[in-house]
Amino acid sequence: MKNIFKIALLLIAFSGTFAANNTMHNVILNEVSTLNTSTKSFNTDPKKKNTVLNDKNATDIFIENNTESYLALQLINVASDKLGTGYRSGGTTPAGFDCSGLMYSTFKKFDITLPRSSHEMAEIGTEINPENAKKGDLIFFINRGQHRINHVGMIVEVNGDEIKFIHSSTQGGVIISSLKESYYERTFKQINRIIE
Image 1 (tube, rainbow, N blue to C red):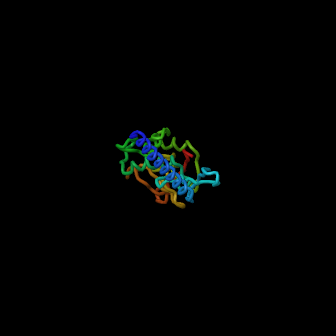
Image 2 (image 1 turned 180 degrees about the vertical axis):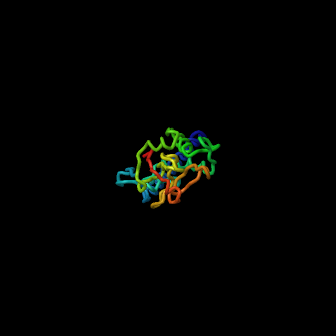
Image 3 (image 1 turned 90 degrees about the horizontal axis):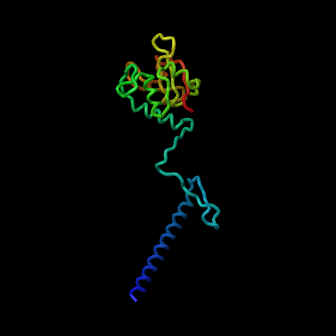
């Protein structure tokens, strides 16, 4: 008799759990079907045409400007981690960077091997007009009375007609400068797109 009583209790408990889970499932589906922000739908009930699933989360990251590539943003983040690092001729490490060394080591983190000098970097990729510049493009200069490109940076911001770039300068080390600054406006040569 005690065994029958135990079995009956187990059956009651199991059916209660099943009913609670089934009710919770229906509540979740009903809540999900009322969301308006979703992008996916599926058919779960033959009486209803579509039940909508919200596939967006509060922690999702959206790149609002679709002209920016994820790789370009990552390159900018890596280079920006070096802000304040001093200049060192021939440098490619946190002990100090020259301009091409900063670009070389930044791209190398993503298995992209650039030439080691700025004038050789200027020969790869696609040269583009400044009005079409994007984050991640390389920007080149001819400084100090030279006859060929001898300075490089990477574009980190384009705001209307202002282009900002990160580079390693002999005076300030790794800094962000603007093409609107008279020195860089005067010595600007070209912009090359290395990544699409």
